[in-house]
Length: 140
Image 1: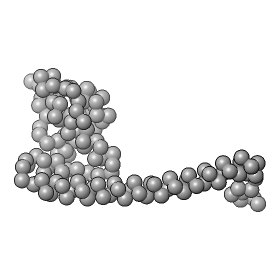
Image 2: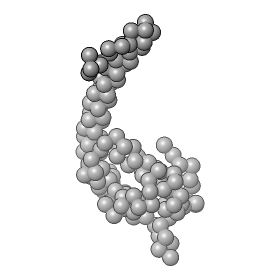
Image 3: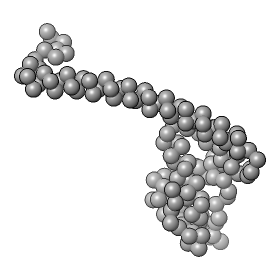
C-alpha cells in the first residue's frame, strides 16, 4: 500500500484528500484527534504538506475505520506507533482483537448471503416454472 510519492514532493491537503478518499475536513479532524503518528509539516504560510509515509499511514487508518475499528482503538494504535519500539505486543493485541471482530462480521454477512442466495433460488425456480403466484403473498 504505497502512494508512489517521494519525500522530495510533499502533497497538499487537497492532494492527500484525493489519494485517501478522506475529505479535507476529515484530514483536519484526524490531525486534531491525534490519529497521525507525527505532526504534519507546514509551509511558512501555514499550509499542510504531507509525506508519502504520512499518506501511507492515512491509508491504513482509512481501512481500519472502514472495517469498523472504533475511533478510540485507532487513537490508541496511533499513540502506540508514535511511542516507537517496545510496544509491538500491545499493537498486535489491538489489531488482532479488531481482526477477530472483522472475522465475526464477515461470518455474519456470509450467513446473510446464504439466506439471500437460497431465497433467490426459490424465486428463480418458481418463476422458471411459471408458479410464482402466491410466493409470500400477504393477501392469500
